[in-house]
Each structure stands twice: as structure tokens, then as C-alpha cells.
Image 1 (cartoon, rainbow, N blue to C red):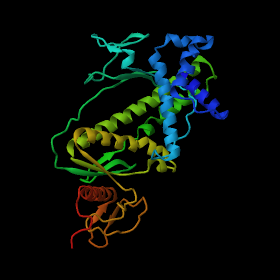
Image 2 (image 1 turned 90 degrees about the horizontal axis):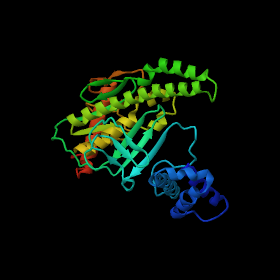
Image 3 (image 1 turned 135 degrees about the horizontal axis):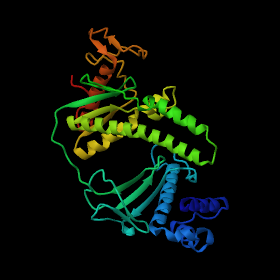
Image 4 (image 1 turned 135 degrees about the vertical axis):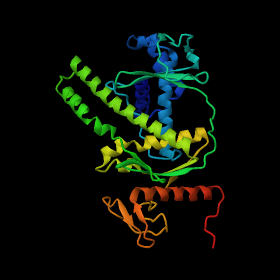
Length: 357
């Protein structure tokens, strides 16, 4: 509500040609003065820190939007902040250290103006948290996410390095020949999802049965997302633990998601997996390199480096016409990714750009 009120104030000022409403002025209008009105008197029953954090999110959204317009922010263009829908089942509140939230001796989370909340801890807190965000997802589950300071945990030096070719037939093919099967979590759950979505379509809008059916669909999707995330965590942890350097292809997932393979691409979760590799490598003293997506990894012989030309997707194995080596398409691509990643890393560390004569 506070987020939408603040967005409404700034949009009205822009439409009237008035100056941009500052952060302090916006807080005075949307929070301080709004509490005195009959329509917003209930804002006094909520911690003031939560209200201020809602406006902080709006201010950050506007800063990112302006930085994207002026070119100071790299990446895809960011659109203007939009109103939050009242139909969105996801909710979140954030308490900072100023709110004086605490973790009691009994393991409960004490939140201002809410009280003690029982928590099932997934892990112990490594240090004093600076903020906590309580999130309710679409499936009706509540999560408490803490911001804490942790140091790096370097792992012992490893000798092995690995290149990874991500795909749909196999989720990952490694340069040492190992192939990780693609679990296809969404495809496996399609029957259950289809049944739940049909039951939702038969309910009347606004009825309690529709609310229950929508929650059932959300829980089914949450199980798929949890399984996919757990698989990515386990695989990325194992690769970072066993290898000093990991090299992956810099795939354009957003572009692949606009093809006829969009459903399978989203189901694979490549972006989530590579993001986990990156932050775990930074924390444990490993290296993750990205190879350009336009490298002809599937067209080049990993033995003699001769480019054999493009091949249709149904060709899964081929023989090099020069050296006669028989290649598995995906394993060969993983080996080329490993070689290209090593070359880029050597050049970045001061190695020779051109090979010796």
C-alpha cells in the first residue's frame, strides 16, 4: 500500500509538470500525513521501519530506472516502476537493525508489533544479522531471510579443471566425459499440474474454493522450483569443491527462451545454476570463466583444432576429416570450452596473446 501510494504521488507530480518529489517529502506525505487520515490510520499499527523500507524499495527502483535511461547502468533497459497488484499472493516485509528485532534464546524470532514467531532453522546464523525479510510466497509458506556478514571460506587447492557444456538432452556434459542427466522437473510434474489447473478453471471467481484451488496450484509449482533449486545447489557445490577452475558457455538464456524450446530451457534453469557457480567460486577461492557463445565449440575438433563446419542437432557424433578422431558432440564441445577458458584466463593473467613461433 505504501509503495503504491508513493508511486502514485510521483506519477501525479510528473503528469502536472511539477518537480520530482524528494525522498524526504515523499515519506512525509505517504507515511506521516497519511497516518492522520481515516483511510490510512491503520498504518500506525505497523512498525515504522517496515513502511520506510517499502519507500526505500520504490526509491531504489526509480534510481535504477533513471540510471538505465542515462546509460549509467549496463544491461537490458529497465522500465519505469509499476504498481503492485493486490492480486499478487506474494508478500514481504523487511526489518532493519533500527527496528530492534531479536532472536530469542529459545530460537524464536521476535518482531516489533508482531511478537515471537516460531522458526524452523535451516542453519545457524554465523554472525549478528543486520536485517531480516519475512516473505510469504504464492504457496502460503513463510520464510525469514537474514542479512549477515560472512568471510570467505577458501578450499584446499585443487589440480583439476573442468569445462561444462549445458544442454537439454543432458543437463551438463563435462570435459572429462561425464554426463549429468537432465531431471526435467517441470515435465515430470506436468500431470499433477494439469490436474490442479483444471480444477482451478472449474471454480467460480471470488469463491473460497477458487482460493483453495489456486493455493494447490501454487504448492505444486513450489515443489518443482524447490527440486530444481536443490539439484542446482548440489551439482554446483560438487563441481566447485572438486575443481580449481570451472568454465561454462555464456549462453543467452533470454534469447533461447523465445524459441520453440522455451519450456525446456526454463525447466533446465541454466541461469540459476551458473549464478550459483559464480558466487560459490568467489566464496571458496575458485575460478569460474565464461566462454563466448559465438565460439564454434561444436564445430571444432578438440584434438587438431580444425573447424569442420556447422552440423544439425540430430548429429550427436562425428569424425574429424583431418585427424580421424571420433567425437561425441557434447563432450567435444566441453573440451573446447575448457581450452578456450584456459586461454582466456592465461591472457587475463599476463600470458602471451599470440602463440610462440
